[in-house]
Image 1 (cartoon, rainbow over the protein chains, first blue to last red):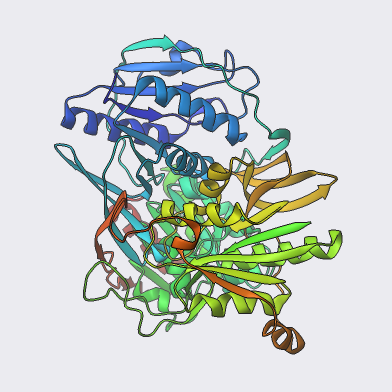
Image 2 (cartoon, each protein chain N blue to C red):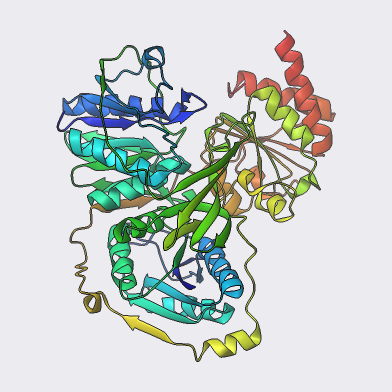
Length: 322
Length: 257
């Protein structure tokens, strides 16, 4: 137990978030390099999880903690429970997703435990016991290689940045009883747009900027739906009130790293590029041939997006039928 | 209502960011220094709460001497006083410890911080300060309402919003959409020159920040991400030809479809 790698899970609508599998894959790599075990900590409300759900997580051990009335967003109690698990298991490294809630938990644990923290890491290198992580700063315009010296150390990994390796099987499931305070935060309500794919986790993002000319993004939404992707927006579009802040991609918005980013009517300001330049493939559609985005895009079409975007969708529908 | 705003001075996002010769820091020659954008939301919200509930707004910052400019800008917007803890090259935990130490001498009902600083992107200060002071924290707030000693906050979660309540004193961090920050007026700028702005050192707070010591996450090297090369503009006789060619390339060449 002592010195193990501890991966921390996170749920969405009753299933593990993809980032949990990314944490497990990284955790497996680290545990093997150090000759220690990989433990997965699962905090789930009562009987929310079945043994089936834990079938292929690849950990040597799964710790199940089932507090009554647990809301992950009540981060005071959530932090207390995680701190207790860490206190009882004494891991060398803790790996969690740098999700909205994960980032706060990681920061709080680092402060509480005086533990080194790599926040929002996009790669990790482990040689014997020396851990180096890389994290983007200045909105991704610069990458910082950092060393994390101390035990335990905490890695909050950026969703979609680490590969998921084929994971099969798992070790024993152990129930762990943790007594925790209810904390001082109270849960009042929650609204989740469950039919929308979260921007930071999407494999494909279709994004619109000032060139959209207004709040009607239906053609982008249609293309995104066809591709199983999410819709994003530039800061201009958000400042105009056309799209909500939650869709803003950029240095002062969300940073995304999908396989495919389609930028429609987006000129390509540095701050926007900071939010999407780590996408695997970038496509730009813009009527201005001098738009800076074309110098960063793998493929570009100069033209009217209201003409081009539906044609792209049509072409994809044709291929899907074949 | 005594409100403290945690403020950081950062390079403007328009600045050219280049790596310095030492390879572990940023070249500061051409930088325009501004209030961290997420801290602007914090100052604005603090001023609105003061306008509704009365009280005062204190700006608290850790940074080198030039940070006083950022604090003065916040005073020009309407904050009442400022305190700079003069220190440089602190890591996240050292900064949080300095802020927490200063806050022990400042009575507060509310602390408001930006969710992150747009230079280091650590998302660390708010949660760490709340931990050290053992007060409740709610992150990424898009809307808040205070009644008696309870604050109700709307906060971002993945794909949606959660509504939570906390007792005061507490700390919350800002999210884009919380408010539209105001601009300073000329009278405001003039008044700011006379508002109290103190400067303390870590030693004044009995904290030892020996450079390099006890920094648990150390920068080994900074480098630029791989440059993206310009790709190709797709040619064609018609829009539908170009669209078809794009989809073909995405499927066969790039293999993303």
